[in-house]
Length: 154
Image (tube, rainbow, N blue to C red; front, side, top):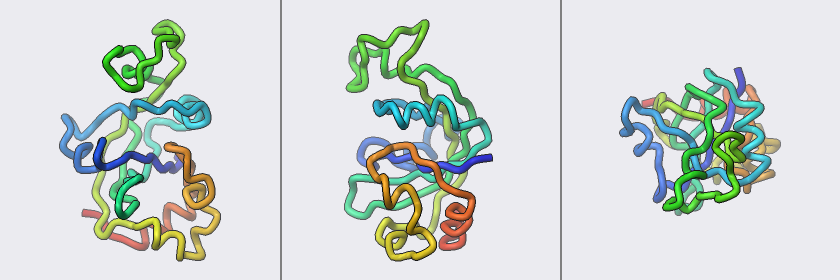
């Protein structure tokens, strides 16, 4: 099993939105960075756990935990001309953009803020603190365990 961090702007799609979705699941669509796409396509597996991270907001933070339920899915937003993530060059028979399905497991209370993570010496090597631009990032088992020790689940 591997651990990951998935970023979403809470005004666009929040952890609460995922928890309220049918079956508490959704596809993680709209990723348009090749490095992040490669992680979704090649590295993430069903059963892996992810942090759901709220980015580009007043207080960026890890808001919840998700489980990966399916992988290797063509990103449906790439084929939807009405989507801001539409890609006319993406071929349904050989899709350029791949996604995963995630399921809400539980919210974190309190959330783990970016500020708190930056101040925590145990997390100084975390990808989030060093390569913050990627919307899909690996998390080590040690980082996962440490962050989980900072909060409780709801």
